[in-house]
Length: 61
Image (cartoon, rainbow, N blue to C red; front, side, top):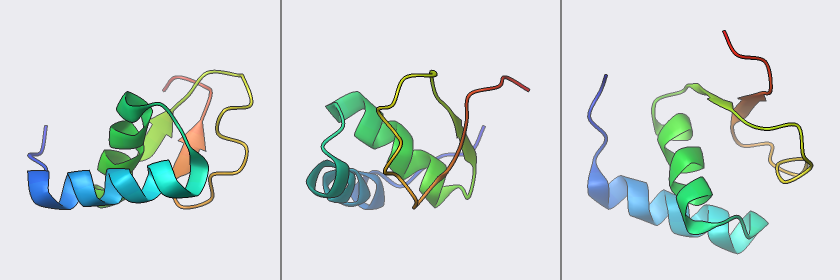
């Protein structure tokens, strides 16, 4: 696990809310994945189809 800076995280999360309108928890998951240059595991629904800022996968490792 890596700590994530709260100041950076909420600012990035608010950007995702403005750009893609995800649920608040999803916006923090997106911002954390972006900050850590990680990949976010998402469901197979179309909630993330427009997201291009973060690597996404629907297949668990």
